[in-house]
Length: 245
Image (cartoon, rainbow, N blue to C red; front, side, top):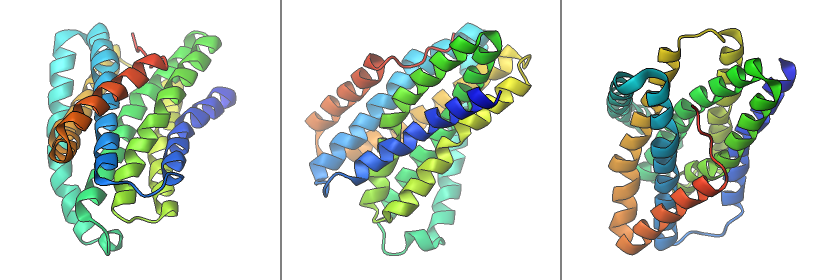
């Protein structure tokens, strides 16, 4: 168990590595920001459409998808209000662009939500066959890189110090090994529950893309938004993203 938990932790920390790569980049222009936001939107849409929703449907059918996605969407609507209120009173908001600060936190939240069912998959896969658990951890680690970048970009634009950005991303990344631990301990967990959790993550991601990422990028450049979204989706598909079936 210790070995697969360590591998899962490293897979999750690939998200942190993605954030570090962003911090190494020079100052972003408005169009550069639009590209990275669109890239994040494309990555999330690829995860939702090619990973989470098919996996949710395969494990629980149409009801699991509908209930899960709806619950995730509503959850993020409520979270948006809560996070907005909390961040307005937080020291982190001082001297920073509140809009980008909130956006960065939203992406971090949906990344954490998305990492839980992926961690469950690693744990369950390891129980079925150790090599399967390792393979799933590798696939997840590959697409965690661009997800870390998508969290870091708006937080950086908000003026948040690099150390705090890495701390936020790492906190989100730890949900992968947490999910793995749960998957190992509750291997016989209801497939319907796992399917609902995947649908929930899909709804949460879809909300952030539609409500925040696309509108912000589109306002700067329609062409860059379209191109960035396509590239983001293509990147995730090409690096061998996880199919949880």
